[in-house]
Structures are given as C-alpha cells and as structure tokens.
Image (cartoon, rainbow, N blue to C red; front, side, top):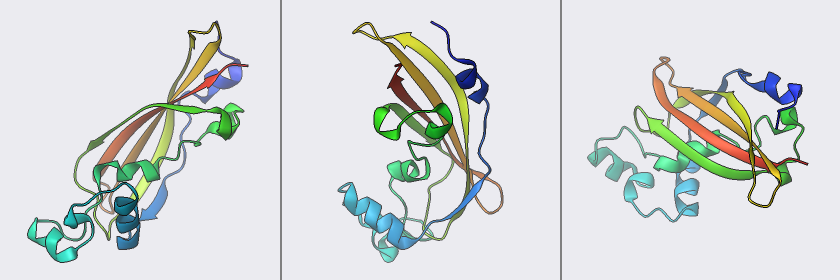
Length: 150
C-alpha cells in the first residue's frame, strides 16, 4: 500500500490562524446541546463564585473550533464519506466567554492500513492549536479522520 503523492504532499500543510470570539450564547447553546447541567456554563454569578472570569465552556467545546471536514477538499474526499476515529485535547487553561482565540490547524500525518473487510483505510491526523490575545496557548487538539480508499 502506498499513499498517493497528493496525499503525501498534504503532510505539514497548515491553515492561517482564524480568530474566534467566544460568546456567552455559544457556550450556553453548546452546553445545553450536550446535556451539560453545571451552572458554571450558564450563570455568570456561579462561574465567578467558582473562580472563573465569565461562564466557562465545557471541555468538549474545542470540538466546535476543529471542524471534521477541515482539509477534506484538499484530500479530494467527500465530507459525507469520512468517519471520525479519535479526538483528544490538552488544555492549558479554561475557555471562557469573552475570549478571543487564534486557531490554526495542521495535517500532521496521513497513512494507510488494511481494513478488516479487505479494503484499505486512509487516516488523516489533524492538529489544532489555539492561543489567546496575548499569544498564550489555550489548548492543543488532535483529531483522526478515516476514509475507505476507493
């Protein structure tokens, strides 16, 4: 099995940083959508009592900043044909309402493996980094997406 030159060339490709302003409504909607019940995600007074400067995003909030179809058009893949395999985040501090994050993404690896049914699976590893207004790191993430090679 060998990767196509087009896929190999994508390893190391990065996006330009994108600015994302975290609003209270973003956090509240996300927290409600995932069934989060902690009041620190909804109530400023409760968040302040817990030591946060504003309402705080749930730990999985970073996933909205790392769209799964990122780079998919560069791979030549149909967004409907990919599957999510793994995702992990390391936080350096909580994400709070009022933050402005600079988010960038990078293809760190592309590789193939034989599938159980005899086909070939192509995996893409995408890394995300976010920093705050003072360029201090907020989180780094890693997401693996997979597609059956046709």
